[in-house]
Length: 350
Image (cartoon, rainbow, N blue to C red):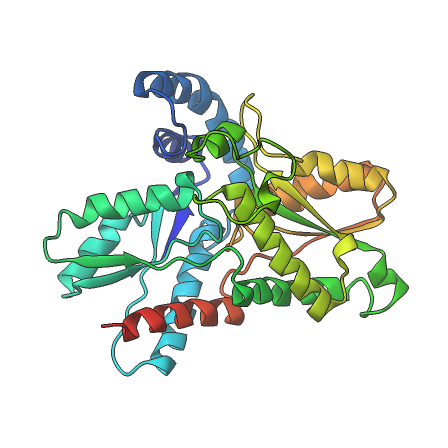
């Protein structure tokens, strides 16, 4: 199971190493290598490593990076769930696309144990070139070093109903703080689904026609495109989460908004952006706001600091009353069971 990664420590030096590895990936910043080098190594990293290190210090735990710690706990939970489903030994190691433990280290360790068949689970509910695409590229590169190793990507669909239900189950204790289902208090809650953003140029570059993606505000309403449009996937994810919220939590569709977070630089990104959406909801009279981050399966800097700390400050300063961030899936039972079922179905194939 592979997630994006984390610095090894909340220090400018460690954050600088992590940011350099991440941002120098051409899948992340699709620019000529020389220009990407100047942009990342000369302009972005020397400045950003200090501010990012301060933010990482706010979320760091005794177990280290929350994202890595949650990944380890999830691996243990998935292994346990898998052993109940199959007759035989199974290992569920974790790896990070950037940072440690690396994909190459994970494959080498499995190879040394005699493993020759690997199912790769990128822990990104929505496909993008910068996350799932880059992870598959790296696995392909690493696997060539181990002749005889076979591997297969095990991908969740963005509208996977079991995943969506696990997301909502994780939200139920938070929503319960805002009154029981059917109460006026619960009816007044707004839910913001905050997906990770992408620059619009990356959305357009994935469109082989060059004429469909972002050509209109309703471009994602038509039947699915013949390519993995990230925005369309996020909207499909939002739709199945909305259905589960209505069924399990009594939250109507009219109470749900969608936004995109974590924009960097001056390029135009997918909108509406989460920061502006939070402020606007408060200004429009929303008193109680619950935020769910469906792009993130483990709590990390983007959830704990960006949403949980800065997001709350933005909402309250704009006139909101109560703000709550739903924990990511982390190692929750429903999420572990969904991944175990994905792995079991793969293992049962010849």
